[in-house]
Length: 130
Image (cartoon, rainbow, N blue to C red; front, side, top):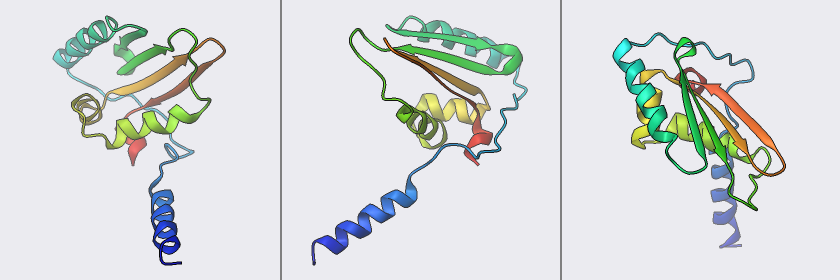
Protein backbone atom coordinates (compact mmCIF):
# COMPACT_ATOMS: atom_id res chain seq x y z
CA UNK A 1 0.00 0.00 0.00
CA UNK A 2 2.88 2.36 0.69
CA UNK A 3 3.97 2.11 -2.94
CA UNK A 4 0.55 2.00 -4.58
CA UNK A 5 -0.83 5.21 -3.03
CA UNK A 6 1.98 7.50 -4.28
CA UNK A 7 1.72 5.90 -7.72
CA UNK A 8 -2.03 6.49 -7.79
CA UNK A 9 -1.60 10.12 -6.73
CA UNK A 10 1.01 10.65 -9.43
CA UNK A 11 -1.21 9.06 -12.07
CA UNK A 12 -4.20 11.18 -11.03
CA UNK A 13 -2.16 14.36 -11.11
CA UNK A 14 -0.88 13.55 -14.59
CA UNK A 15 -4.38 12.85 -15.84
CA UNK A 16 -5.49 16.21 -14.46
CA UNK A 17 -2.74 17.93 -16.43
CA UNK A 18 -3.47 16.16 -19.70
CA UNK A 19 -4.68 18.47 -22.42
CA UNK A 20 -7.65 17.58 -24.56
CA UNK A 21 -7.05 20.27 -27.15
CA UNK A 22 -8.81 23.56 -27.72
CA UNK A 23 -12.25 24.38 -26.34
CA UNK A 24 -15.10 22.79 -28.30
CA UNK A 25 -16.40 26.22 -29.36
CA UNK A 26 -12.95 27.45 -30.51
CA UNK A 27 -13.02 29.04 -33.97
CA UNK A 28 -9.83 30.04 -35.74
CA UNK A 29 -9.69 33.79 -36.38
CA UNK A 30 -6.61 35.03 -38.25
CA UNK A 31 -4.55 37.80 -36.69
CA UNK A 32 -3.11 40.76 -38.57
CA UNK A 33 0.67 40.65 -38.82
CA UNK A 34 3.28 43.00 -40.27
CA UNK A 35 4.62 42.72 -43.81
CA UNK A 36 8.15 41.89 -42.58
CA UNK A 37 6.73 39.04 -40.48
CA UNK A 38 4.81 37.77 -43.52
CA UNK A 39 8.08 37.71 -45.44
CA UNK A 40 9.79 35.84 -42.61
CA UNK A 41 6.97 33.30 -42.50
CA UNK A 42 7.26 32.68 -46.25
CA UNK A 43 11.00 32.08 -45.81
CA UNK A 44 10.31 29.75 -42.89
CA UNK A 45 7.84 27.75 -44.97
CA UNK A 46 10.45 27.43 -47.73
CA UNK A 47 13.06 26.22 -45.21
CA UNK A 48 10.68 23.72 -43.62
CA UNK A 49 9.81 22.33 -47.05
CA UNK A 50 13.44 21.35 -47.54
CA UNK A 51 13.05 18.76 -44.78
CA UNK A 52 12.38 15.20 -45.84
CA UNK A 53 8.70 14.16 -45.71
CA UNK A 54 7.57 17.70 -44.87
CA UNK A 55 5.84 20.39 -46.93
CA UNK A 56 5.00 23.81 -45.51
CA UNK A 57 3.10 26.75 -46.93
CA UNK A 58 2.34 30.13 -45.40
CA UNK A 59 -1.09 31.46 -46.40
CA UNK A 60 -0.85 35.22 -45.85
CA UNK A 61 -4.59 35.99 -46.07
CA UNK A 62 -5.24 33.54 -43.24
CA UNK A 63 -2.02 34.19 -41.27
CA UNK A 64 -1.69 30.42 -41.36
CA UNK A 65 1.28 28.10 -41.59
CA UNK A 66 0.14 24.83 -43.15
CA UNK A 67 2.41 21.91 -42.40
CA UNK A 68 2.04 18.55 -44.14
CA UNK A 69 3.98 15.65 -42.69
CA UNK A 70 4.22 12.35 -44.54
CA UNK A 71 5.09 9.22 -42.62
CA UNK A 72 8.08 7.28 -43.83
CA UNK A 73 7.58 4.15 -45.85
CA UNK A 74 5.86 1.37 -43.87
CA UNK A 75 5.09 3.85 -41.05
CA UNK A 76 1.75 5.01 -39.73
CA UNK A 77 0.57 7.78 -37.44
CA UNK A 78 -1.57 6.67 -34.51
CA UNK A 79 -5.13 7.70 -35.30
CA UNK A 80 -6.10 10.85 -33.40
CA UNK A 81 -3.20 10.70 -30.94
CA UNK A 82 -1.00 13.38 -32.55
CA UNK A 83 -3.76 15.99 -32.14
CA UNK A 84 -3.11 16.58 -28.44
CA UNK A 85 0.67 16.41 -28.89
CA UNK A 86 0.60 19.03 -31.65
CA UNK A 87 -1.78 21.25 -29.68
CA UNK A 88 0.38 21.01 -26.54
CA UNK A 89 3.52 21.87 -28.51
CA UNK A 90 1.89 25.01 -29.87
CA UNK A 91 0.44 26.10 -26.55
CA UNK A 92 3.00 25.07 -23.97
CA UNK A 93 6.37 24.38 -25.58
CA UNK A 94 9.34 26.61 -24.81
CA UNK A 95 10.96 25.48 -28.07
CA UNK A 96 11.93 28.53 -30.10
CA UNK A 97 9.79 27.62 -33.12
CA UNK A 98 6.54 27.04 -31.23
CA UNK A 99 7.10 29.91 -28.84
CA UNK A 100 7.72 32.34 -31.73
CA UNK A 101 4.65 31.11 -33.64
CA UNK A 102 2.48 31.42 -30.52
CA UNK A 103 3.74 34.88 -29.57
CA UNK A 104 3.38 36.23 -33.12
CA UNK A 105 -0.21 35.01 -33.34
CA UNK A 106 0.47 32.83 -36.36
CA UNK A 107 -1.97 30.00 -36.96
CA UNK A 108 -0.83 26.44 -37.57
CA UNK A 109 -2.64 23.67 -39.39
CA UNK A 110 -1.24 20.15 -39.62
CA UNK A 111 -1.93 17.40 -42.11
CA UNK A 112 -0.47 13.99 -41.30
CA UNK A 113 -0.43 11.48 -44.14
CA UNK A 114 0.54 7.84 -44.02
CA UNK A 115 -0.15 4.82 -46.21
CA UNK A 116 -3.69 4.37 -44.94
CA UNK A 117 -4.97 7.70 -43.69
CA UNK A 118 -4.92 11.47 -43.78
CA UNK A 119 -5.48 13.35 -40.52
CA UNK A 120 -5.96 17.11 -40.27
CA UNK A 121 -5.54 19.14 -37.07
CA UNK A 122 -6.15 22.83 -36.57
CA UNK A 123 -6.02 25.54 -37.59
CA UNK A 124 -5.02 26.87 -34.19
CA UNK A 125 -3.29 30.01 -32.97
CA UNK A 126 -2.53 31.29 -29.48
CA UNK A 127 -6.24 31.98 -28.89
CA UNK A 128 -6.80 28.20 -28.88
CA UNK A 129 -4.54 27.95 -25.84
CA UNK A 130 -6.78 30.03 -23.57
